[in-house]
Image 1: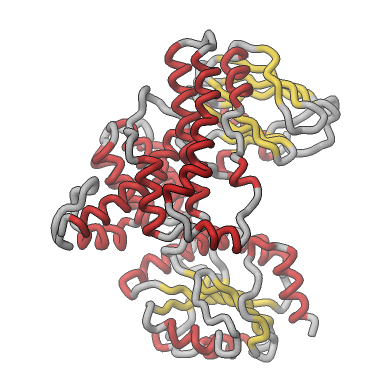
Image 2 (image 1 turned 90 degrees about the vertical axis):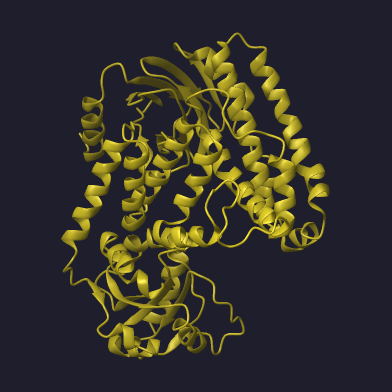
Length: 502
């Protein structure tokens, strides 16, 4: 029995017998591609929620999954995703064809529900997102009115979903299940339209588009225990609330110290909250003030779960306190509290970890070469990031693989963090909880400008975006600006090796 299998078995032993789902199936012409199911916590996709499924040589599989309440899950095979509907103490058998691109529910107690779900193609990718917009196309669209774009793209897409709604309505499924499926279909359609607009629209254009997409609908669910796409819709709907609140502030002459619509706090207070508790708290506050209590509770739980999986211990602490104080009997509390405690233990364990080196006198360092020159004899990969930067933290998750590749080679890793002085402890806690080995220093927004100037002095592109990467040779000379990201894997390895082999 593998370690992963043992872990799954242990999980299943702790789950009551009535909280299980039996999924079986057959893959035609199975060719050893991975098969796994992703069960969202509330919404969104996290690799931590992946459960691998063993497949026999003949392509058959049979697994018991810890499903404690009805869920929409993703079955992933050969990089194709299939949405399935599950409930505790139910069964489903599916067939995946030889192409690996099509799935057919064949039997089981939830066959009718999954036949309809498959026929609806719930997660169908819209035509306007299938091909990435070129810079020229994006530039043209960015000059059109929001109304024109809505009529060209969003409206036909939303109309297309009505056919799926009709298919569900005509089915023999229970009424509540029909409402659940239709709610997911509507939510998914608006989420995809939102993502399309994000690709090229400026704030003013996006604000007008939001009004067309969300202005005439209620964010509240039609039933309890909505699916993950509904909650993703709520997350995107927050963008509309934020832009509408800012517009009402301008047109209604709301002062900086006066309450904003939807948030019931002033802009000044909101800025203070974001610094202390993160944007996730502010997003939850808008949901709490505009939606049902059970929606707000689940939304907050997901925000907390995401902070935990990101190992953002400061935000996790704040959100856990909010969950405990606002929803003292929350079904999510005990599990999430245990997860935060695990982070606290990691932090304690790494308090004196010599592999996580904070550069001596970092507050007085005025040039990156003060650090680089202390590492002569090694190729240095410099990562400029911030604890506030989502893409930065996403890239840091690839650091272990990068460092493993260059283990025992003359490569050093330096992390220059840009955070305000009051975030000094937050920064130190973050790198220790994430066990981010390397050399670290922090500068505030004003101080880091001198570092940007010297790093980009000979680069025609002076853009100071985050994250950004640089490579220095063994003599301490900057030889590569705007290097590849850790997530680019082999491409970055090749860049570093080219300098290492000089």
